[in-house]
Structures are given as structure tokens and as C-alpha cells.
Length: 400
Image (cartoon, rainbow, N blue to C red; front, side):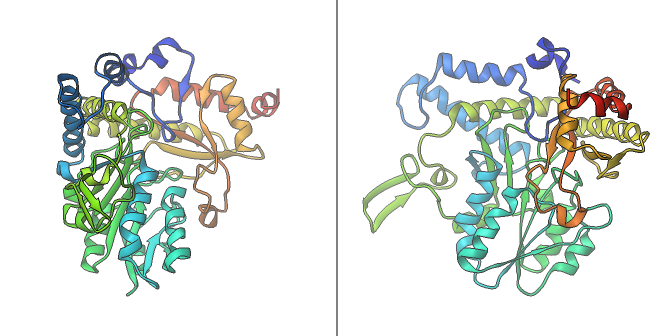
């Protein structure tokens, strides 16, 4: 699907790219929009009173509108950051650090990415909150029942990935939000793996915070988004201060900041990144997020079926509704499988995938991960599986 839009695939027909959970390839329209900015109007935004600056302002503001539309939010609820990690840290440092108090509880799971674990650990050390873990079921999924059982009188926040980056399970975020809000609990969604792959509607889910990255959805690196519900914005404190986000500062006691979201975007922003993200959002919208999700699930079903043919391959996640499949091969280190596949120009991820505490649930520390996107094909999956079909060949070639 749409493979001709990606120069890397057109110019390198022998490469099979299965590491979309780490970052996605970039279509020509995204690259062209960034080139156009740097070649033809490479000026700052919200600073100049001249035509080139007006053009940069117009596209910059359009990007915020389009990102908001993409997740069904208001434009003033969209804050540009450097990525999902930055967005989560922004919420923790700019909101939760003053919102939470000693003894308050945050619920996460052992399947979360480091970016949705370590910032909370910092609050444990800094203000002595408590981090607790929602148990996963036998498929390593989050269930609403287990969320319900985990809530205590001290629970103030539930922070979960919409789709996890190793198991690939799609969490019931809308149902979790209904339950959480009945108990005056805020919900943060790490959308790094969900927003790029399926339709996202923050009004429908009623999530309080949503964090995601441009580079995992066909956009450039170094740009991300923090969605914060409008009713909570006044409680969010800027974590960076500087130019562009203030009206005046006459003295330490007389500082006036601009309205949201500009007050949270100090300094010169990643203009090229935002322009590229704008193009990526328009590109994905033109394909259709439902169509993308359907294609990925079709590919994943085929991949799982093929891998199950080989008894020496152990699937970590048999059941999910995403394009993420993690597995191991008996008595072969995951990195060695990665080196073997690389000889045939197949790109996969190996290791712990920044989910280093998932081992407490799975008793597995390393896996091979295949993460699919809409430009992947059945033929690519079959080539992968054919290469994995001969155990002796893998053992022989992985060290040569």
C-alpha cells in the first residue's frame, strides 16, 4: 500500500523494513515539505512582520489545526514537544509534581515503555508518591477488570500505553477513562504506538493527556505532541521559560505569560519538524486510519499463522489487534537472529525494546520484534518466514 511514496523502498528494493515500532519511513511529501521550508522560507515564526514570516506562521498554525483535527481535539489543546518522551515528562514535571502528594498512587503496568515508567519513578524519589502495577492477564493484556481491582482510595492517576511496544495489545482506554473518572482519577495515554496505527478520538475516549511522536507516524524526528484536556490546562506549569511564550517580564514579581498553548512552547520551535508533521498528518488522513489499521491486522494474522508452523519459534504475543509480533527462537539469542536476518536485508528490532520491567510478567528478557506498517506486504512476510523456516541454516549463518 502506497509503497511508491517512499524513496527508501523504491531505491532499495531488496530492503524489508519491519522496525516501524522504532520509527517509520518518511514519504516524499513529508521530505518535500521540509525541503521547501529550508529552501524557500527558512525564517522564524511569530517573530517577523514580513511576507516570509507570515508564510511560516500560516503553515505553523495550520499544522496545529491539522494535528488537533487528526485526534479530534481543539487546537489550543495541542502543545508541540520533541516527542512522546518529552511530552510525558512535561506532564509529570509540569502538572503531576504539584498535583500529586506524598502517598498518592499512580497505576502503570510492567509492560510500559521506559518513557512511561522512569518519570513516575522520579516522583517516587522526589515527592514520595507510590507506583503500583495493574496485573496483566494470561495473554499479557490489560483488562478492565484488573484495572478495577487495582484502584485504591489513594489512586490519582492511571498512565498506560494505548498499544504496548512489545506485546502489541490494544488497551481499552475509553472504558478505563469512564471507570477512572468515576473515581476522580486522571488518565494519561502514551500514544506512541497507537496514534500512528489506528483512529484516535480524544473526545470519544475522554483521555486527559495524550502523548505521541511524529517520527513514528511518517513524520520527522524531534517533533511530538502533548494533548491536554482544556479544563486542565490552567494547572499545567511551563517547564521551560524564554522567548515567545511571554507577554512581558518587568520584574520577578511581574511576569505575564501568553495564553495556552504558546505559553508552553518557549524558544524557537522545531519549525521544520512541525511542517513535516503537518504533511504526515495530511498524508495519513488521505489514506485513512481505519484502512491502515485493517491492513496491519491482516498482515499480522498472516505472520502469526506462518510463525506457528515452526515449533522452535516461541511467540510472546499470539493475540492482539495491532501489527506488533514478538518472538524467540529456541536456544538462539535474539540479537543473533537479528544479525542473521540483516544478511538478507531484513530490518527487525531485537532486545528488550525499552520495556525492561516486562520480564517480571513474561519471564523473558529479550525478543525479536516485527512491527508492521501499511507499506509492508504479504510477500515480505513470506520472505521473512522462509528465512526462519530452516533452523540449521539460522544456526550456521548467524555467526558467519
